[in-house]
Length: 525
Image 1 (cartoon, rainbow, N blue to C red):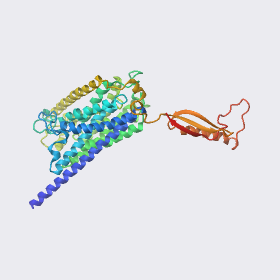
Image 2 (tube, rainbow, N blue to C red):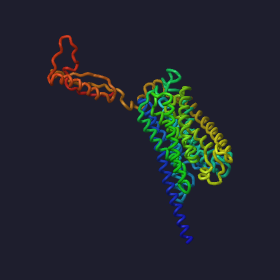
Image 3 (cartoon, rainbow, N blue to C red):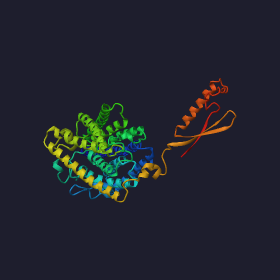
Image 4 (cartoon, rainbow, N blue to C red):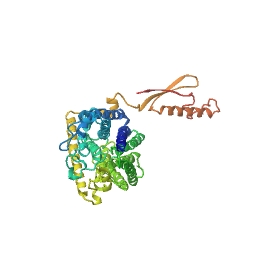
């Protein structure tokens, strides 16, 4: 009967809400796990003298951004607004949704808040790697607070909040050019914001000591890099987490969104794959003896960044185009940074600013009308400029306005923070601290002992003990002991197990001839 049919409909709706909440929470944890990737990639890209500093800054990033986003950022990004610039309520999660007596409504609000926090932390941490090895961790805490508390939330409000001026489905008013900005998963909100902040920070802080002392064309490899294993492992962690980034932004699996999220996963993968393949192909063409894994993983990351804005709107074949262009954009901007002596340790500007801008152009040019109808509904009457439908020009114009607004807002805010830090002599560590390494200077000692004083003890034929002291790299002491032991065994075996006869007068004598098996002790310095 009608009552039973209505009851089944309510149960189905509750089940959909439950699935959506669990899906959002799962994707948020994937985005959160990208912090592991950022940390590994950055640690692998710096000298071992600054390992603790990088670890501390990435932990600090999560701690600071979680608090300030809770207090200020969520309200600015998701609160109601009159003119669509920034939210004016919901600070500290005080919106009525969070205290709703309807379990599903409250749960969805809390899950979305956690998902938003993960995005804010991602945008803020982009700056960390760019200015590594010379930016004080106290200053980075201030920058992270500004990013997560004000800069990122305001931009996030524009295309994502229901009342934001760039939201294609804006409520209570018309979006810019009546079509809004097609920034699905944050090509502008997360990556252009973080990339611009990184660019200005690199410019203001200046290059590391020795980075450009041998001419304008120094390559990135001229500075010590700790571990390609960490770099690639970190990049792969980020690739894995990106599926939460892009797929989770759909926010619901109801109706056609189940198809959309499945398509997004494929587009994300293809963009990443083409970004990495294009980068390594260009590097191979330019120099067949300098094909570095970190460059390929950076191309992959640029492809992932470029996929973020358009992955819900473009056709799958266009992912190959966007991915290939992302590899070229990465190589081009990375070269420009070196040419203009801008020292970006992890190529954050090329990856996030370049990839983010490319992704926004991808949305403006290649979004299909069918996919836009599927995502926004049939009332959304527009498509990418290249498809020639009605309002295609409006979509492109809206994107230009949106990108210029991001550039203006982020540049103004970040420069205020950086000039304030400079005014209080907090923009950069001293030359002495930088030369010695921040771990030893600020964080209580080196993470790894690069050199050990190793004492080799031995016995001669008479049974008397002797010793030999050497300074060797950590981990090499055992190798030296094995070599010494092999030499001694060789001297003895040549004489059939007997003590070798003394050499003829005037002949060189093996220094190990009278030594017994070595023992070693080490102490760290």
